[in-house]
Image (tube, rainbow, N blue to C red; front, top):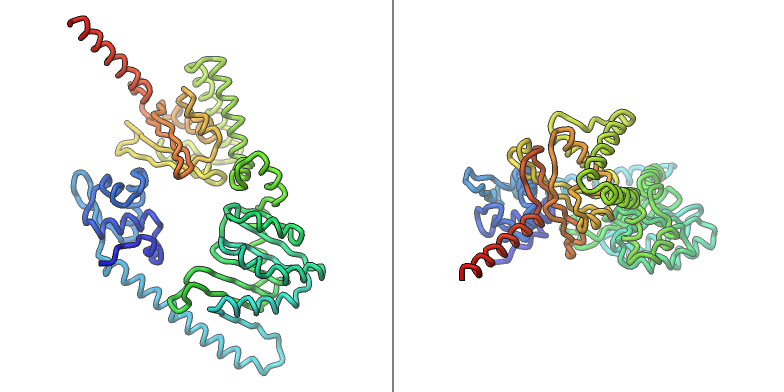
Length: 454
């Protein structure tokens, strides 16, 4: 029997974790959350949120067992309709193509501007056609690279150089994650280059805001194999796409010269640009300021001062920015803070509790802030970031206190994770370090008693 490859389920709209979980349930039958974490090779904190997504999509059913188990819905039942929908989409695309061909034939003889439309399934033919269009470039060439775009760009380098020699302006957008950044730097004498955190799936080139070229290295339909591309001569469409890309990518991008200057103090372009993110360098200052307060006033008084500062900050945000962050429940308030943070920093929180008003356990992961690294060595229960300190204000408002149980760096995923427990003020809960210290003291006392008795 063919072994299941979870990646193939991406064609049906599932993420990698969702694909792994569904494949494991199909292969092994009903499983608990713990069993799924092991069999699907998915982090335990990720299992339950992804199972909920699969349930909402109709791929998984939960069983009324304790502990809770879930099972896969029949692939025939859940995947067949999706496949049928994709087939219908291909049929509609064919109908659209037929209609376009008919319209093209009807208008070909008329004395009017012709809008040309080509689809290529062969890369050589696509690039030859693109080179011919580059010969007619007069004002501007706008390029957005995808993961595989460097090789294509190198193949077009001489054609692009000829355009630049004719005073044609060349603008190039590339992702930070591009592995061969050095090759992109070779184009600095030809193009204005900006780097962006987003990575598009397609290579895009727009010539004089009138010709749009789209090259995809992913499979579009079964008939196109591993390559497909589209070339359209339509000024209105090209101008619209150009305007959107300029606003969403070019204007938000970092000039490659700025990134290059940061590389001297960093291991990679990606880390250099992360350091330039306001949420990172601002949190580095916040972390240092918070640590100074703790060192100067002591842990207990220092944390009280920081929480009072956080309450004032929360009030300022609500009054001056009009954001309502202190909502009717602590869980909703924390989610509002998290949503506010994710606009600039990749922070995600897993809430894990059946009754969050009595006991709340959450895990912070994917935090890029430098201060999360500092929190591993800090004895404070406060995560010294703007987001971390604002959450303390939420806890204070609702009469809660926090204990940081553990802060760990996952080297494989290159991310920090912080485990915190939240409980009503006055409740007793020790951190992992405190618990281990008490166990060691108790063990030593028992050993001494045993030796004295002997």
